[in-house]
Length: 227
Length: 228
Image 1 (cartoon, rainbow over the protein chains, first blue to last red):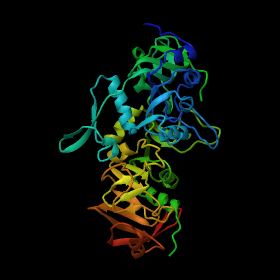
Image 2: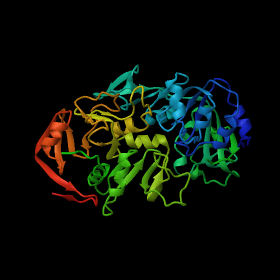
Image 3: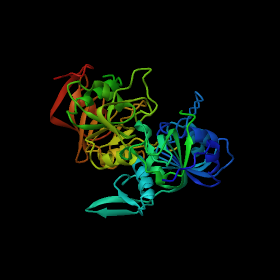
Image 4: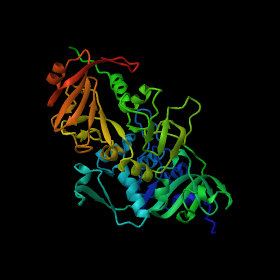
């Protein structure tokens, strides 16, 4: 079994280069790699494309910012692909001002696009979005008299994800609803960096309990920030 | 007759639709209120699209778990026998027809069963989240809405004016005036909540409403009882 390098959050952030596409795990802050996000927000890389379920929270009234919201605030993205931006007023502001391109994708389609990207599929057919703006410009394919949209796979240059526990080989175990998009993103990026709360010896995780196989993971980072 | 908006009546009436063993996904906002009116005598399995089967009530203060949240990001709990899964499995469950009911809040709903709830162009663009998949995949789509917008305009339309979340997917609509089925391009009034009358509802709704012959006039008290 090959051990995966355990690197600092700063070194992890440095692997994300100008213009990269970046997947960030998490669902409204739950299960996001907060330590790497914190290191990345101070980097000078720009023009990234974010692929994430949402952009966490940025509330202008209270000034509260969480998770990926720090990266939006630091203006790292030229494009954001997400299912929901309603809890981040800064994302909405950048979109309305034409500063950042935002592509809104139904959540199930986004999850499946990432799964398809990691699973070597050329796309998939979904009934979601038929008859709505989501269908604009997309191919409609009729199967057994029912129309479906052809949705294409999504991949990224780098994925930063969060797990509860890893062994030194990079096998991952998630906890509760912090799983969400993380296992999907682990399969769909060229470089996968997993931030974890605990790193154990190989053999300490029962093979039946592994949620994400080690071969998807390239680097491990020890979590220091959990929110 | 004066209209007084009442979200609790909507939640309380919807809670009585479900039966033991059914799988239900409640949307954010008004639909979340439905949970508090579910009778203890029935055993429903709540699905939450962020990856829970068997969602439980909000935890007591002090026992929140940062890794256990609902689809609105609020602290949640899981019932005994429940399980967690990733977002691809979650939406496989949803699109695959394994969820019996989805309850969604709406900005507009029309008599063709079209629903708009994710976007007001130029004003509010929060994104659809899981709503498009839920309306497309759930066996029965229940729209939950205050009958009138704050401006006084009927949320029930002949044709939605806002961008659609889903085409022809709404089966049932519960407002604070009554219960409607969407069939054959019309709203059918099945129940009317006193003190409103079917005639008043027809007159004040900006859509074609057919009053069923057996339309029931009911009084809903918020203990969840329906009085005939």
